[in-house]
Image (cartoon, rainbow over all chains, first blue to last red; front, side, top):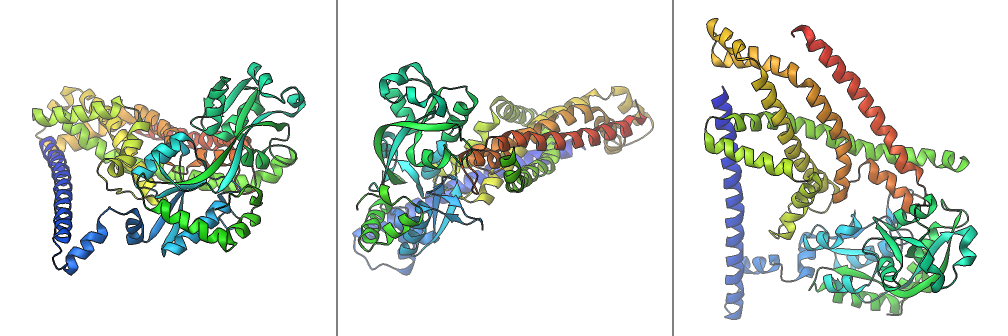
Length: 294
Length: 228
């Protein structure tokens, strides 16, 4: 009996190995066919039907890749007023609505996927998403790792402190005595590093707020758009407030490095800014003051 | 307090959806890992040395690396390294990738428990079976397996309870289980933002679930008590 099981196990493992081998070799075949197709094209031979399908399937153009599969997968986090769910569970927001319109202009459907913000570059490069469109600050890191669109929205990093001590911290010098919580890899962390503040990186901007509310950090640095929505009267953090803005920065949309979709989106932004649809959408979500002229 | 009462129905609804995902991952993992663990156990006990070494190396790798890394590798590597994102970006793909990682990981832990259980049955039992003229198959199913099951219940209970809590690791690949659902209210979701309590409230779900499991597994242990 034991032997039988052992043989089955051995067989399964062997089979899975064979499976791997097959995938690898079939990929190679595709690669060679693609090469062959390009060569043919260079030689200006008559393109057969087969060759043209092969060409469309090649990953040369990100636009072609997205149109081929028929969906634009947009990586987001739940981030009002840019991307959030309405009562019906539908994704709405300034970014979400613009993404829907952009996908429509490409002739594809849009699919929103919630991602872990730390893994956004991995998600893009691994092709599990096609773009990051979620009020993303255009930092040097982002620009070097992604193909970014033009800036479409202004933003700032602001300091969050408990409301009762807010008067003491109205300039950058006074911040030196505080301990900060900032989102790891965020523009807020960049500011904290630049000002050589005493800070702890946490997982999300919302975690940074919790640190301040719980008293484990004195202050936090987060996006002004988010601060406006999340702290002060009538929110869950009624005892917190925001004081000074540390910098001004811009939001952009990120695509895979080298993607031709970024240029396509710039065209789309320019067109929708010109015909007023972009402003109209911004007014729906109260971000019209922040929109950048295209 | 009033605010919490107002938020309660929305939060409970979201947490229920998240917990359903947690339970789904939990059961799929168990269903997959129970049999796979047995196969791996037989592999590592095999007298055919290459197979036994191969299995042991696999178990070493899976048990020796964090489950979080395994989740990241299984979900992202097909797209990153092979250029073919087999799982896709949607929720189903993320769930499948998480299931595969969890099944593989837990099967390796289970296999060692099975192995301990099988090897812990005294040789005398097998010998007695042989004396009675039973075949090896009969001895395994009627003598060894039964006693193995009784022996492995306590360590298996431990792993099963750990599994309930480990499912929260799947949020690293953005599987929206209960912790993810709880955290969503911190940054704002469905009109509630900056609410910390839903995250901590998720602990109640885990506690109740593990309470029920502890009772059920305790009862199973008692039932199997008829042989010492």
